[in-house]
Image (cartoon, rainbow, N blue to C red; front, side, top):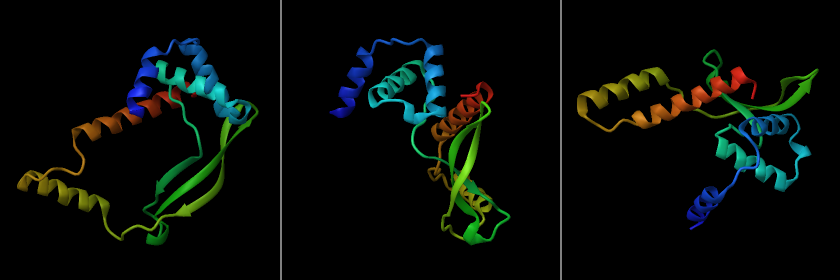
Length: 149
């Protein structure tokens, strides 16, 4: 029911901000998230969704797989704080948490799985739709990096 209600609200949404204005507000939020009241934040969310502008909230982290490390340190999540120094956005590392992972060779496992899919007709773990979704995310990340958003 909530999903239908959200869809109805999206269909009834009348934007008050242009695409460029929305991008400016998203950029301002990225530099100083605490400056916005909850109602303002909701308007930014709605406009970002309407104009298809990437908008990220919450903690910022990067998942890292470092094949040069020992197994107990190969997979980690790095938490960052966004800072603006002399007008430039930078990241300050706050914490690194290591994630336990199975001692295995991922590329070898992918090759074995691919062989099983081709030779035995089993359903792949990831299909074309998942591959397309990955490409969409990578395309958005590239666009965001080049536009500074």
